[in-house]
Length: 479
Image 1: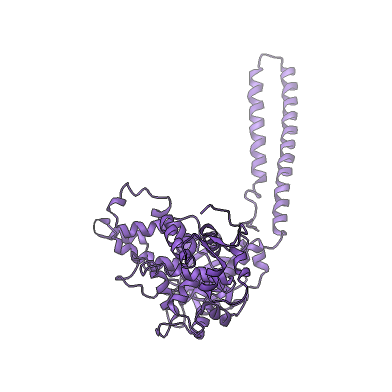
Image 2: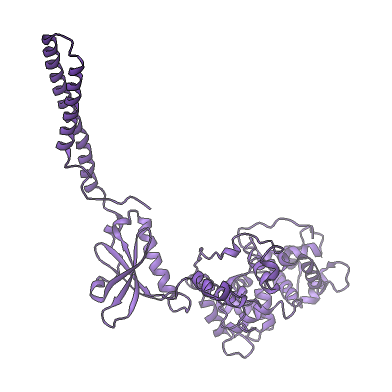
């Protein structure tokens, strides 16, 4: 992430005299050997030459000593500059955490390490409980972004604590040198070790479904908090599999269908974490137990109130074409929101559900308006059919089975097209909706070619816009 400033001495800074002496000795030795090679010359010449050589050797030695001394000074200066360099951001930051870690905990065995610090087994001095302690060195948090990363980690752990499949956060501490994050100590070992410990090293689909279910529950909980995990990557899903090759022919059709629905690049067409929990392959004993609320369902309900009356009517017609199997994941969601299990969602139940979407909760509170938009029969409650119309994943319906989408959207269209001539006229629209007065404002949104009626291609385009977020442009299609 950045530079680790060091105040230790530069290595070798105290060896100047040794190096210089060694250099001088070597030079003099070589000069003496050279003198012996010139023994045929006169004694005078030899003496003069020897004297000159000794002088040169002495001068050369002096120069080398000066050179070595000059080389050493920049290193000493560099060391001095390091000592006087900027203080890392982490050292200048008060994180606002408790300051008495050493009074409450002691550190034991090292568990592992990362870029900024180490994780140890810790012991609570008051009750002897074993915990995991991540100790992060402030000196390594050079840039402000490193400090923010630590603060964000603690904030996320606080938000997710209490979930059965997330490590429990206990507290955060700091002193002058470190930040300490105290968490639950997980001693269950690695998943791979468990697989290898199985008889014949085989992990059944049922075993895999348990693990996948745990991961999906965590992902769904993260999404409700506005968080993205970004590190869930089971090896089998790294690349698009060829289901004709091993081991897929021996894998159940339900498992392969589950994988196909997850391996979709378009996030609008891909299963959400909560939807995946409703898939038959993941269900516990065939039943969807403790399904978390799907953030996309909450988003669809909030979006429904913004739709035109015509689009709301069109979605209700489309919802009526789905069968029980196709509605399984939405039924799980309806049951999760219908706390008292009386078959309808009250205003208070709607408020409790929408409050689970924490980022949205901080921005607006329009629960009554949302319920009234979904409540088509105006009885003050939302029944299942009304719920489906508001929460249906239109883009998934089209992308998962284009042929069925053509049939389904045509069936919805024909609920308006009473004379089956291939168009929805103003009179047919008025009859279906029961609205009085001018019907032109409803037509204007869908009647792209301005011929005063709605074709099936224009109707399908209207439905597609229900799955498009703000800022996205719909590309024209022929059908």
